[in-house]
Length: 266
Length: 228
Ligand SMILES: Nc1ncnc2c1ncn2[C@@H]1O[C@H](COP(=O)(O)OP(=O)(O)OP(=O)(O)O)[C@@H](O)[C@H]1O
Ligand SMILES: [Mg+2]
Image 1 (cartoon, rainbow over the protein chains, first blue to last red):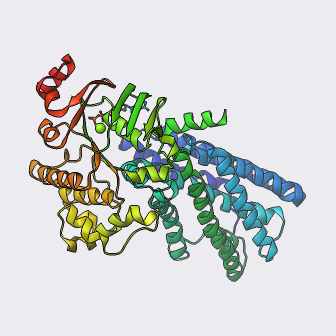
Image 2: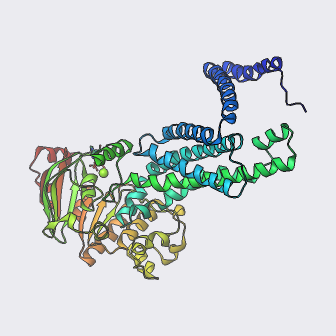
Image 3: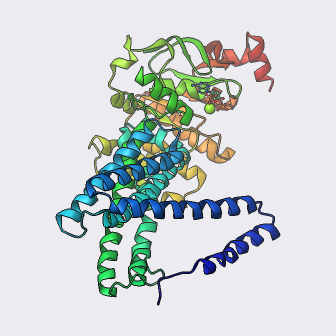
Protein backbone atom coordinates (compact mmCIF):
# COMPACT_ATOMS: atom_id res chain seq x y z
CA UNK A 1 0.00 0.00 0.00
CA UNK A 2 1.25 3.43 -0.90
CA UNK A 3 1.12 6.05 1.86
CA UNK A 4 1.01 8.78 -0.80
CA UNK A 5 -2.41 10.43 -1.11
CA UNK A 6 -2.72 12.77 -4.07
CA UNK A 7 -4.12 16.26 -3.66
CA UNK A 8 -6.91 15.50 -6.13
CA UNK A 9 -8.11 12.54 -4.11
CA UNK A 10 -8.24 14.76 -0.99
CA UNK A 11 -10.97 16.82 -2.68
CA UNK A 12 -13.19 13.76 -2.65
CA UNK A 13 -13.17 13.91 1.16
CA UNK A 14 -15.84 16.55 0.70
CA UNK A 15 -18.24 13.63 0.18
CA UNK A 16 -17.60 12.60 3.80
CA UNK A 17 -18.65 16.06 4.92
CA UNK A 18 -21.70 16.18 2.69
CA UNK A 19 -23.18 13.12 4.38
CA UNK A 20 -23.50 14.56 7.93
CA UNK A 21 -24.49 17.85 6.32
CA UNK A 22 -27.44 16.29 4.53
CA UNK A 23 -28.47 14.34 7.63
CA UNK A 24 -28.52 17.62 9.51
CA UNK A 25 -30.46 19.28 6.69
CA UNK A 26 -33.15 16.62 6.27
CA UNK A 27 -33.75 16.17 9.97
CA UNK A 28 -33.48 19.89 10.67
CA UNK A 29 -30.85 19.41 13.32
CA UNK A 30 -29.57 22.94 12.78
CA UNK A 31 -26.04 21.60 12.75
CA UNK A 32 -25.12 22.51 9.16
CA UNK A 33 -23.15 25.57 10.12
CA UNK A 34 -21.37 23.63 12.84
CA UNK A 35 -20.51 20.75 10.51
CA UNK A 36 -18.98 23.09 7.94
CA UNK A 37 -17.08 25.15 10.50
CA UNK A 38 -15.82 22.03 12.29
CA UNK A 39 -14.61 20.43 9.04
CA UNK A 40 -12.84 23.57 7.87
CA UNK A 41 -11.37 24.24 11.27
CA UNK A 42 -10.18 20.65 11.63
CA UNK A 43 -8.55 20.72 8.18
CA UNK A 44 -6.77 24.00 8.83
CA UNK A 45 -5.64 22.84 12.28
CA UNK A 46 -4.25 19.60 10.89
CA UNK A 47 -2.31 21.25 8.07
CA UNK A 48 -0.99 23.89 10.43
CA UNK A 49 0.11 21.32 12.97
CA UNK A 50 1.65 19.28 10.15
CA UNK A 51 3.93 22.17 9.24
CA UNK A 52 4.62 23.02 12.88
CA UNK A 53 5.51 19.39 13.62
CA UNK A 54 7.93 19.24 10.72
CA UNK A 55 9.58 22.31 12.17
CA UNK A 56 9.47 21.04 15.78
CA UNK A 57 10.85 17.63 14.88
CA UNK A 58 13.90 19.35 13.40
CA UNK A 59 14.42 21.41 16.54
CA UNK A 60 16.71 20.43 19.38
CA UNK A 61 14.80 18.00 21.66
CA UNK A 62 15.47 20.12 24.72
CA UNK A 63 13.67 23.06 23.14
CA UNK A 64 11.04 21.38 20.97
CA UNK A 65 9.70 18.91 23.52
CA UNK A 66 9.20 21.29 26.49
CA UNK A 67 7.72 23.89 24.17
CA UNK A 68 5.13 21.62 22.59
CA UNK A 69 4.31 19.72 25.78
CA UNK A 70 3.69 23.00 27.62
CA UNK A 71 1.34 24.16 24.90
CA UNK A 72 -0.54 20.85 25.11
CA UNK A 73 -0.78 21.03 28.90
CA UNK A 74 -2.10 24.58 28.87
CA UNK A 75 -4.66 24.00 26.13
CA UNK A 76 -5.83 20.75 27.77
CA UNK A 77 -6.18 22.44 31.17
CA UNK A 78 -8.34 25.24 29.82
CA UNK A 79 -10.46 22.74 27.96
CA UNK A 80 -11.04 20.41 30.92
CA UNK A 81 -11.79 23.38 33.17
CA UNK A 82 -14.98 24.07 31.21
CA UNK A 83 -16.53 21.04 32.90
CA UNK A 84 -16.08 22.51 36.35
CA UNK A 85 -15.87 26.28 36.05
CA UNK A 86 -17.92 26.80 39.22
CA UNK A 87 -15.48 24.89 41.34
CA UNK A 88 -12.75 26.85 43.07
CA UNK A 89 -9.12 26.35 42.05
CA UNK A 90 -10.17 24.02 39.27
CA UNK A 91 -7.65 25.31 36.73
CA UNK A 92 -4.52 24.96 38.88
CA UNK A 93 -5.70 21.55 40.08
CA UNK A 94 -6.21 20.27 36.53
CA UNK A 95 -2.97 21.78 35.33
CA UNK A 96 -1.07 20.32 38.28
CA UNK A 97 -2.64 16.91 37.69
CA UNK A 98 -1.77 16.91 33.99
CA UNK A 99 1.81 17.96 34.71
CA UNK A 100 2.11 15.21 37.30
CA UNK A 101 0.75 12.59 34.90
CA UNK A 102 2.87 13.71 31.97
CA UNK A 103 6.06 13.92 33.99
CA UNK A 104 5.61 10.48 35.56
CA UNK A 105 4.72 8.81 32.27
CA UNK A 106 7.61 10.46 30.50
CA UNK A 107 9.98 9.44 33.26
CA UNK A 108 8.85 5.81 32.91
CA UNK A 109 9.27 5.84 29.15
CA UNK A 110 12.77 7.25 29.31
CA UNK A 111 13.86 5.26 32.34
CA UNK A 112 12.99 1.93 30.74
CA UNK A 113 14.06 2.95 27.28
CA UNK A 114 10.62 2.56 25.78
CA UNK A 115 10.73 5.89 24.02
CA UNK A 116 13.59 7.98 22.78
CA UNK A 117 13.88 11.58 23.88
CA UNK A 118 13.33 12.97 20.41
CA UNK A 119 10.43 15.23 19.39
CA UNK A 120 9.01 12.83 16.81
CA UNK A 121 8.44 10.19 19.53
CA UNK A 122 7.77 12.16 22.69
CA UNK A 123 5.41 14.77 21.23
CA UNK A 124 2.78 12.52 19.62
CA UNK A 125 2.85 10.08 22.52
CA UNK A 126 2.55 12.88 25.09
CA UNK A 127 -0.31 14.29 23.07
CA UNK A 128 -2.22 11.04 23.44
CA UNK A 129 -1.55 10.82 27.16
CA UNK A 130 -2.48 14.45 27.84
CA UNK A 131 -5.54 14.35 25.59
CA UNK A 132 -6.96 11.24 27.21
CA UNK A 133 -6.21 12.52 30.70
CA UNK A 134 -7.96 15.76 29.88
CA UNK A 135 -11.10 13.92 28.84
CA UNK A 136 -10.98 11.77 31.98
CA UNK A 137 -10.64 14.79 34.24
CA UNK A 138 -13.54 16.55 32.54
CA UNK A 139 -15.68 13.43 32.90
CA UNK A 140 -14.76 13.08 36.56
CA UNK A 141 -15.59 16.70 37.31
CA UNK A 142 -18.94 16.53 35.58
CA UNK A 143 -19.84 13.30 37.23
CA UNK A 144 -18.79 14.51 40.65
CA UNK A 145 -20.97 17.60 40.37
CA UNK A 146 -24.01 15.59 39.40
CA UNK A 147 -23.38 13.01 42.14
CA UNK A 148 -23.11 15.80 44.71
CA UNK A 149 -26.38 17.36 43.69
CA UNK A 150 -28.22 14.04 43.33
CA UNK A 151 -27.02 12.77 46.69
CA UNK A 152 -27.47 15.98 48.65
CA UNK A 153 -29.91 14.37 51.07
CA UNK A 154 -27.67 11.40 51.72
CA UNK A 155 -24.69 13.67 52.31
CA UNK A 156 -26.66 15.71 54.83
CA UNK A 157 -27.77 12.47 56.49
CA UNK A 158 -24.19 11.20 56.69
CA UNK A 159 -22.87 14.47 58.11
CA UNK A 160 -25.73 14.51 60.61
CA UNK A 161 -24.74 11.07 61.78
CA UNK A 162 -21.26 12.38 62.55
CA UNK A 163 -19.38 11.56 59.36
CA UNK A 164 -16.36 13.57 58.32
CA UNK A 165 -16.76 15.08 54.83
CA UNK A 166 -14.33 12.47 53.58
CA UNK A 167 -16.40 9.63 54.98
CA UNK A 168 -19.63 11.17 53.77
CA UNK A 169 -18.21 11.45 50.24
CA UNK A 170 -16.99 7.86 49.97
CA UNK A 171 -19.94 6.80 47.87
CA UNK A 172 -19.63 9.80 45.57
CA UNK A 173 -15.93 9.34 45.07
CA UNK A 174 -16.47 5.65 44.26
CA UNK A 175 -19.18 6.38 41.73
CA UNK A 176 -17.21 9.17 40.12
CA UNK A 177 -14.10 7.07 39.69
CA UNK A 178 -16.16 4.20 38.44
CA UNK A 179 -17.79 6.36 35.79
CA UNK A 180 -14.49 7.86 34.73
CA UNK A 181 -12.69 4.51 34.50
CA UNK A 182 -15.26 2.25 32.86
CA UNK A 183 -14.79 3.56 29.29
CA UNK A 184 -11.08 3.17 29.84
CA UNK A 185 -11.36 -0.47 30.90
CA UNK A 186 -13.73 -1.18 28.02
CA UNK A 187 -11.30 0.32 25.56
CA UNK A 188 -8.46 -1.90 26.72
CA UNK A 189 -10.71 -4.96 26.68
CA UNK A 190 -11.64 -4.58 23.02
CA UNK A 191 -8.36 -3.19 21.79
CA UNK A 192 -7.39 -4.60 18.42
CA UNK A 193 -10.73 -6.36 18.02
CA UNK A 194 -13.04 -3.48 17.32
CA UNK A 195 -10.65 -0.70 16.60
CA UNK A 196 -7.11 -0.98 15.41
CA UNK A 197 -5.47 1.68 17.54
CA UNK A 198 -4.50 4.83 15.67
CA UNK A 199 -0.82 4.81 16.33
CA UNK A 200 -0.32 1.21 15.38
CA UNK A 201 -2.28 1.70 12.18
CA UNK A 202 -0.17 4.73 11.41
CA UNK A 203 3.08 2.88 11.93
CA UNK A 204 1.97 -0.07 9.81
CA UNK A 205 0.80 2.28 7.04
CA UNK A 206 4.19 3.94 7.28
CA UNK A 207 5.86 0.60 6.57
CA UNK A 208 6.91 -0.48 10.08
CA UNK A 209 6.84 -4.21 10.94
CA UNK A 210 3.54 -5.13 12.69
CA UNK A 211 5.43 -6.54 15.68
CA UNK A 212 7.28 -3.27 16.18
CA UNK A 213 4.05 -1.35 15.77
CA UNK A 214 2.37 -3.54 18.37
CA UNK A 215 5.15 -2.92 20.86
CA UNK A 216 4.73 0.81 20.49
CA UNK A 217 0.98 0.49 20.74
CA UNK A 218 1.27 -1.53 23.91
CA UNK A 219 3.44 1.14 25.48
CA UNK A 220 1.06 3.92 24.55
CA UNK A 221 -2.15 2.04 25.41
CA UNK A 222 -0.97 1.07 28.84
CA UNK A 223 0.46 4.53 29.43
CA UNK A 224 -2.92 6.02 28.59
CA UNK A 225 -4.65 3.44 30.76
CA UNK A 226 -2.65 4.37 33.82
CA UNK A 227 -2.57 8.11 33.22
CA UNK A 228 -6.32 8.24 32.77
CA UNK A 229 -6.80 6.41 36.08
CA UNK A 230 -4.30 8.64 37.79
CA UNK A 231 -5.79 11.87 36.51
CA UNK A 232 -9.38 10.93 37.36
CA UNK A 233 -8.27 9.98 40.85
CA UNK A 234 -6.25 13.14 41.24
CA UNK A 235 -9.05 15.61 40.43
CA UNK A 236 -11.67 13.64 42.31
CA UNK A 237 -9.70 13.28 45.51
CA UNK A 238 -8.66 16.92 45.50
CA UNK A 239 -11.89 18.51 44.35
CA UNK A 240 -14.44 16.74 46.55
CA UNK A 241 -13.23 18.78 49.54
CA UNK A 242 -14.38 21.97 47.91
CA UNK A 243 -17.98 20.90 48.30
CA UNK A 244 -17.62 21.39 52.06
CA UNK A 245 -16.63 24.21 54.43
CA UNK A 246 -13.97 23.75 57.08
CA UNK A 247 -16.82 23.32 59.57
CA UNK A 248 -17.80 20.12 57.80
CA UNK A 249 -20.86 21.71 56.23
CA UNK A 250 -22.07 20.96 52.76
CA UNK A 251 -22.05 24.05 50.55
CA UNK A 252 -25.40 25.19 49.23
CA UNK A 253 -24.72 25.26 45.52
CA UNK A 254 -22.01 25.81 43.00
CA UNK A 255 -22.35 29.60 43.19
CA UNK A 256 -22.02 29.37 46.96
CA UNK A 257 -18.83 27.42 46.38
CA UNK A 258 -17.25 30.16 44.36
CA UNK A 259 -18.33 32.84 46.81
CA UNK A 260 -16.92 30.78 49.65
CA UNK A 261 -13.62 30.24 47.88
CA UNK A 262 -13.20 33.94 47.11
CA UNK A 263 -13.95 34.78 50.75
CA UNK A 264 -11.28 32.32 51.85
CA UNK A 265 -8.71 33.99 49.65
CA UNK A 266 -9.26 37.36 51.33
CA UNK B 1 -30.42 23.94 77.58
CA UNK B 2 -30.31 25.48 74.09
CA UNK B 3 -30.61 29.17 73.52
CA UNK B 4 -30.79 31.06 70.24
CA UNK B 5 -29.82 34.72 70.63
CA UNK B 6 -30.67 37.05 67.73
CA UNK B 7 -29.77 34.46 65.13
CA UNK B 8 -30.04 35.24 61.42
CA UNK B 9 -29.26 32.93 58.54
CA UNK B 10 -30.66 32.95 55.00
CA UNK B 11 -34.41 33.33 55.40
CA UNK B 12 -34.21 33.53 59.21
CA UNK B 13 -34.15 36.96 60.84
CA UNK B 14 -33.35 37.72 64.44
CA UNK B 15 -34.45 34.44 65.99
CA UNK B 16 -34.36 34.23 69.81
CA UNK B 17 -35.79 31.46 71.97
CA UNK B 18 -34.80 28.99 74.64
CA UNK B 19 -35.40 25.27 74.70
CA UNK B 20 -35.41 23.41 78.02
CA UNK B 21 -34.24 19.85 78.54
CA UNK B 22 -36.95 17.28 77.75
CA UNK B 23 -39.07 19.93 76.10
CA UNK B 24 -40.83 18.81 72.96
CA UNK B 25 -41.05 21.80 70.69
CA UNK B 26 -43.16 21.91 67.56
CA UNK B 27 -41.88 24.17 64.83
CA UNK B 28 -44.60 25.14 62.40
CA UNK B 29 -45.59 27.80 59.93
CA UNK B 30 -46.06 28.42 56.22
CA UNK B 31 -43.84 26.77 53.64
CA UNK B 32 -40.55 28.51 52.96
CA UNK B 33 -40.30 30.45 56.21
CA UNK B 34 -37.08 28.72 57.21
CA UNK B 35 -38.13 25.84 59.48
CA UNK B 36 -35.69 23.35 57.98
CA UNK B 37 -32.99 25.99 58.01
CA UNK B 38 -33.59 26.54 61.73
CA UNK B 39 -33.29 22.81 62.38
CA UNK B 40 -29.96 22.71 60.52
CA UNK B 41 -28.59 25.38 62.85
CA UNK B 42 -28.92 23.04 65.85
CA UNK B 43 -26.50 20.42 64.56
CA UNK B 44 -24.42 22.94 62.65
CA UNK B 45 -25.18 21.81 59.15
CA UNK B 46 -25.49 25.60 58.95
CA UNK B 47 -23.99 28.31 61.14
CA UNK B 48 -25.62 31.65 62.04
CA UNK B 49 -24.64 34.57 59.84
CA UNK B 50 -25.44 36.80 62.82
CA UNK B 51 -26.20 36.08 66.46
CA UNK B 52 -25.16 33.14 68.59
CA UNK B 53 -26.43 29.79 69.83
CA UNK B 54 -25.67 28.49 73.31
CA UNK B 55 -25.73 24.95 74.58
CA UNK B 56 -25.76 24.51 78.36
CA UNK B 57 -24.59 28.12 78.68
CA UNK B 58 -21.59 27.74 76.39
CA UNK B 59 -21.32 28.68 72.71
CA UNK B 60 -22.48 25.81 70.51
CA UNK B 61 -19.21 26.13 68.59
CA UNK B 62 -17.32 25.00 71.71
CA UNK B 63 -18.65 21.46 71.29
CA UNK B 64 -16.53 19.45 68.82
CA UNK B 65 -18.70 19.30 65.75
CA UNK B 66 -18.78 15.53 65.27
CA UNK B 67 -19.72 15.02 68.91
CA UNK B 68 -22.43 17.66 68.54
CA UNK B 69 -23.95 15.95 65.53
CA UNK B 70 -24.06 12.63 67.31
CA UNK B 71 -25.73 14.25 70.30
CA UNK B 72 -28.31 16.07 68.16
CA UNK B 73 -29.83 13.40 65.94
CA UNK B 74 -31.42 14.83 62.81
CA UNK B 75 -34.08 13.00 60.84
CA UNK B 76 -34.60 14.52 57.41
CA UNK B 77 -37.90 14.78 55.61
CA UNK B 78 -37.10 11.88 53.28
CA UNK B 79 -35.31 8.71 54.44
CA UNK B 80 -32.08 9.25 52.46
CA UNK B 81 -30.88 5.75 53.17
CA UNK B 82 -27.43 4.69 52.00
CA UNK B 83 -27.27 1.93 49.37
CA UNK B 84 -26.88 -1.46 51.00
CA UNK B 85 -28.76 -3.39 53.65
CA UNK B 86 -30.78 -2.20 56.62
CA UNK B 87 -27.94 -3.29 58.88
CA UNK B 88 -25.39 -1.24 56.89
CA UNK B 89 -27.54 1.81 57.54
CA UNK B 90 -28.05 1.14 61.23
CA UNK B 91 -24.33 0.65 61.78
CA UNK B 92 -23.29 3.75 59.89
CA UNK B 93 -23.23 6.30 62.72
CA UNK B 94 -21.75 4.15 65.51
CA UNK B 95 -19.17 2.61 63.15
CA UNK B 96 -17.69 6.05 62.56
CA UNK B 97 -16.49 6.02 66.16
CA UNK B 98 -15.99 2.23 66.29
CA UNK B 99 -18.75 1.98 68.87
CA UNK B 100 -21.09 -0.44 67.09
CA UNK B 101 -21.91 -3.49 69.19
CA UNK B 102 -22.89 -6.50 67.07
CA UNK B 103 -26.48 -7.52 67.68
CA UNK B 104 -27.64 -4.00 68.51
CA UNK B 105 -29.75 -3.97 65.38
CA UNK B 106 -32.33 -6.12 67.16
CA UNK B 107 -33.03 -3.48 69.75
CA UNK B 108 -33.03 -0.67 67.17
CA UNK B 109 -35.41 -2.47 64.85
CA UNK B 110 -37.66 -3.19 67.78
CA UNK B 111 -37.80 0.52 68.68
CA UNK B 112 -39.22 1.29 65.27
CA UNK B 113 -41.37 -1.84 65.20
CA UNK B 114 -39.65 -3.67 62.41
CA UNK B 115 -38.94 -7.38 62.64
CA UNK B 116 -35.33 -8.48 63.30
CA UNK B 117 -35.21 -10.44 60.03
CA UNK B 118 -35.33 -7.14 58.18
CA UNK B 119 -31.69 -6.47 58.91
CA UNK B 120 -30.39 -8.15 55.78
CA UNK B 121 -32.91 -6.63 53.42
CA UNK B 122 -31.70 -4.33 50.67
CA UNK B 123 -33.04 -0.86 51.45
CA UNK B 124 -34.16 -0.39 47.85
CA UNK B 125 -36.74 -3.12 48.37
CA UNK B 126 -38.46 -1.47 51.34
CA UNK B 127 -41.69 0.52 51.29
CA UNK B 128 -41.65 4.25 52.04
CA UNK B 129 -42.85 3.71 55.59
CA UNK B 130 -40.28 1.02 56.24
CA UNK B 131 -37.55 3.24 54.87
CA UNK B 132 -38.54 6.09 57.15
CA UNK B 133 -38.48 3.70 60.11
CA UNK B 134 -35.01 2.51 59.19
CA UNK B 135 -33.96 6.12 58.88
CA UNK B 136 -35.29 6.84 62.37
CA UNK B 137 -33.56 3.76 63.76
CA UNK B 138 -30.33 4.87 62.09
CA UNK B 139 -30.59 8.22 63.87
CA UNK B 140 -31.35 6.50 67.18
CA UNK B 141 -28.32 4.25 66.80
CA UNK B 142 -26.16 7.21 67.83
CA UNK B 143 -28.13 7.48 71.09
CA UNK B 144 -28.89 11.17 70.63
CA UNK B 145 -29.92 13.44 73.48
CA UNK B 146 -31.92 15.72 71.25
CA UNK B 147 -34.03 14.59 68.32
CA UNK B 148 -34.46 17.03 65.44
CA UNK B 149 -37.26 15.89 63.19
CA UNK B 150 -38.06 17.53 59.86
CA UNK B 151 -41.61 16.54 58.91
CA UNK B 152 -40.94 12.90 59.75
CA UNK B 153 -44.31 11.65 58.56
CA UNK B 154 -45.27 14.06 55.79
CA UNK B 155 -44.11 11.76 53.00
CA UNK B 156 -46.14 8.83 54.37
CA UNK B 157 -49.79 7.86 54.19
CA UNK B 158 -51.93 8.58 57.29
CA UNK B 159 -51.80 5.08 58.70
CA UNK B 160 -48.02 4.70 58.36
CA UNK B 161 -47.55 8.24 59.64
CA UNK B 162 -49.54 7.47 62.77
CA UNK B 163 -47.57 4.28 63.37
CA UNK B 164 -44.28 6.18 63.21
CA UNK B 165 -45.76 8.84 65.45
CA UNK B 166 -46.64 6.25 68.10
CA UNK B 167 -43.13 4.85 67.90
CA UNK B 168 -41.67 8.33 68.35
CA UNK B 169 -43.89 9.20 71.27
CA UNK B 170 -42.96 6.06 73.17
CA UNK B 171 -39.27 6.50 72.51
CA UNK B 172 -39.18 10.11 73.54
CA UNK B 173 -41.09 9.44 76.74
CA UNK B 174 -39.11 6.34 77.66
CA UNK B 175 -35.72 7.86 76.99
CA UNK B 176 -36.49 11.38 78.19
CA UNK B 177 -35.36 12.91 74.92
CA UNK B 178 -35.57 16.56 74.01
CA UNK B 179 -37.26 17.08 70.67
CA UNK B 180 -37.71 19.72 68.03
CA UNK B 181 -40.14 18.67 65.34
CA UNK B 182 -41.31 20.43 62.21
CA UNK B 183 -44.81 19.46 61.19
CA UNK B 184 -47.71 20.82 59.20
CA UNK B 185 -50.24 18.59 60.95
CA UNK B 186 -51.74 20.30 63.98
CA UNK B 187 -53.26 17.08 65.31
CA UNK B 188 -49.78 15.60 65.37
CA UNK B 189 -48.48 18.74 67.08
CA UNK B 190 -51.05 18.28 69.85
CA UNK B 191 -50.19 14.62 70.32
CA UNK B 192 -46.42 15.03 70.41
CA UNK B 193 -45.61 18.58 71.44
CA UNK B 194 -45.32 20.39 74.74
CA UNK B 195 -44.39 23.77 73.31
CA UNK B 196 -44.90 25.50 70.00
CA UNK B 197 -42.86 27.90 67.92
CA UNK B 198 -44.87 29.49 65.16
CA UNK B 199 -42.70 30.84 62.37
CA UNK B 200 -43.69 33.31 59.73
CA UNK B 201 -41.50 35.05 57.17
CA UNK B 202 -38.28 34.04 58.84
CA UNK B 203 -39.16 35.12 62.37
CA UNK B 204 -40.77 33.49 65.38
CA UNK B 205 -44.15 35.14 65.39
CA UNK B 206 -45.55 33.44 68.46
CA UNK B 207 -44.52 30.84 71.01
CA UNK B 208 -46.13 29.18 73.97
CA UNK B 209 -47.58 25.95 75.38
CA UNK B 210 -49.02 23.66 72.77
CA UNK B 211 -52.75 23.32 73.35
CA UNK B 212 -53.19 26.96 74.44
CA UNK B 213 -51.36 28.32 71.47
CA UNK B 214 -53.55 26.41 69.06
CA UNK B 215 -56.76 27.23 70.91
CA UNK B 216 -56.11 30.90 71.59
CA UNK B 217 -53.82 32.17 68.88
CA UNK B 218 -52.75 35.77 69.49
CA UNK B 219 -51.20 36.96 66.25
CA UNK B 220 -53.12 37.53 63.07
CA UNK B 221 -50.68 35.35 61.12
CA UNK B 222 -51.18 32.34 63.40
CA UNK B 223 -54.96 32.75 63.29
CA UNK B 224 -54.83 32.74 59.52
CA UNK B 225 -52.44 29.79 59.45
CA UNK B 226 -54.70 27.72 61.70
CA UNK B 227 -57.75 28.47 59.62
CA UNK B 228 -55.80 26.93 56.73
N1 LIG C 1 -28.36 30.75 53.03
C1 LIG C 1 -29.50 31.12 52.43
N2 LIG C 1 -29.61 32.32 51.83
C2 LIG C 1 -30.74 32.69 51.22
N3 LIG C 1 -31.84 31.92 51.16
C3 LIG C 1 -31.81 30.72 51.75
C4 LIG C 1 -30.64 30.25 52.41
N4 LIG C 1 -30.90 29.01 52.90
C5 LIG C 1 -32.17 28.74 52.55
N5 LIG C 1 -32.73 29.74 51.85
C6 LIG C 1 -34.10 29.81 51.31
O1 LIG C 1 -35.00 29.96 52.36
C7 LIG C 1 -36.24 29.38 52.05
C8 LIG C 1 -36.79 28.62 53.25
O2 LIG C 1 -36.09 27.43 53.43
P1 LIG C 1 -36.56 26.24 54.40
O3 LIG C 1 -36.37 24.98 53.65
O4 LIG C 1 -35.85 26.38 55.68
O5 LIG C 1 -38.11 26.51 54.62
P2 LIG C 1 -39.17 25.57 55.34
O6 LIG C 1 -39.88 26.43 56.31
O7 LIG C 1 -38.52 24.35 55.87
O8 LIG C 1 -40.16 25.21 54.16
P3 LIG C 1 -41.00 23.87 53.90
O9 LIG C 1 -42.16 23.91 54.84
O10 LIG C 1 -41.43 24.01 52.49
O11 LIG C 1 -40.09 22.70 54.13
C9 LIG C 1 -36.00 28.52 50.82
O12 LIG C 1 -36.63 29.14 49.72
C10 LIG C 1 -34.50 28.53 50.64
O13 LIG C 1 -34.16 28.56 49.27
MG1 LIG D 1 -38.57 22.28 55.30
